[in-house]
Amino acid sequence: MIRVLLVEDERYVAESVVALLRSHGMDALACESAEKALDAPPCDVALVDLRLPGLSGLDLLRRLRERDPSLPVLILTGHGTIHDAVEAMRAGALDFLTKPVEPEVIVERLRKAVERRRIERERDRLRGLDGLVAESPAMRTALRLAEQVAAQEGAVLITGESGTGKELLATYVHERSARRQGPLVRVSCAAVPRSLFEVEFFGCKRGAFTGADRDREGWFVEADGGTLFLDEVGTLAAEGQAKLLRAIESREVRAVGATAPARVDVRIVAATNEDLAAARDLGRFRADLYYRLAVFHVPLPPLRDRPEDLAALAARFAAPLKLTDAAQRALRRHAWPGNARELRSVIEQARLFAEGNRLDAGDVEPHLPVDELDLDLKRRTRALERQLFAEALRRAGGRKQEAAKLLGIDPSNWAYHAKRLDL
Image (cartoon, rainbow, N blue to C red):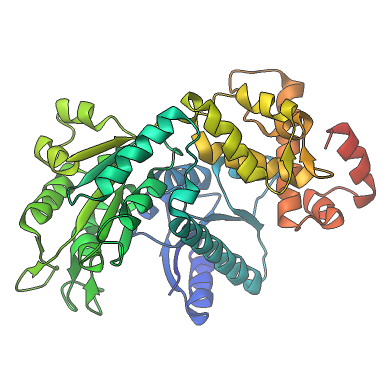
């Protein structure tokens, strides 16, 4: 069942959408504020109103994406502007819906968002090593270490900046371990509210608390005989760290409301973009848990230190189009703080406007992230306009007339704008 987080402060709208979603077999949880949404249990997709009391929908979007970059978030608003759409796109929104919107459209967009996430996760799971590019010496060293670690049974700590491929490497370790026939359960620790830690990790019994209408297995039990991947483990609160340590050491978990613990056989693979050793030294992360997680440590290098991988990744993302030498030079000039994830986003946007069978520098450069310190009005405005045109084309499935309507411009003027913006 699809779990939808609805964040809407107008009660009658929230009740109507919840009823709609439940009538289509979805599990909907409504929150009237961003603050309450941040304490909600993990979900498959979020539908967020832009105008909210307290934190705005845009702020919530950023927080949710920080917790779980793969979470699809759709913006729903009755006060949409082009500026809002651009800001939402830049913050990671998958879709932007303006009220009034047909109920069928809401259901369809949510299902497509969840299916897209499922396909991407399954693709990454099946890729294994194929999803990791290792043309550079630094990445080859990391993969050799991961290969050695996979044959062992101890816990693994994967460190690296956001977007370097930590989840892919965790999948690689699992699929080359003796546990490869068992489950691989992925958990985003940043998305787990403190109040639901025990329920999510250890499970609960029916009637254990208000709302517990059925027995539920926790992630440890789901991963029994396999691997439990803990992404962004450094975000766990002190109480959660203590409970996780106890489960790892005892190899037992007690579901909320259970009278006896259950034995579990789980290998832990954890990942973080933080300096966990520094957090340990500062007292923000338990030293005993750190040593339990870091039996084997596999660091992943950032993309800026892997120039050989940059070219290979760009070529993969661009396929079947070819990257010209000029396009590759333009890509090398960027620092890529978002690593491979950022590179993929840029290439996918550039492909929307490409003509012929190649990507040139002129196709790539407009989609490179703008330097926030750059105050040149013309340059910044041009870059934002291009992003907006790219998003309109994506939503319209490449149909220019439909994209023009979404942008609120006359379709007959598309050629003018294409020339003006060098699309």
